[in-house]
Image 1 (cartoon, rainbow, N blue to C red):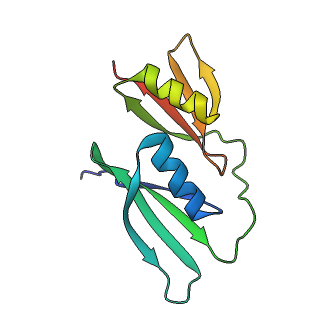
Image 2 (cartoon, rainbow, N blue to C red):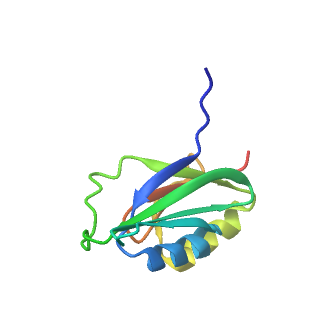
Length: 122
């Protein structure tokens, strides 16, 4: 029996803000969208051409407040072929929330408080 990871879900407060942030920060764009017939939720799958893996952003109409994501002790990781340029971009965006220079990695935080790890290709 084999399993293949296909997506991870993050619930977001404002889909428009999140889509703009993920495109600017990581180059992820919308691939497809599902809207509930009654408008109670919208699911937007985002990704890029480097992998079929997708990030699912879900907004719930009846949950207008920010989500409680606990201690944020989870994250989605990305490698980059230009670590210095990525770091400079994220520094300019003001979204670097933690850096481990000894390990050569850093984390960025999205508008809803989710952490994303940035790793240089090795």
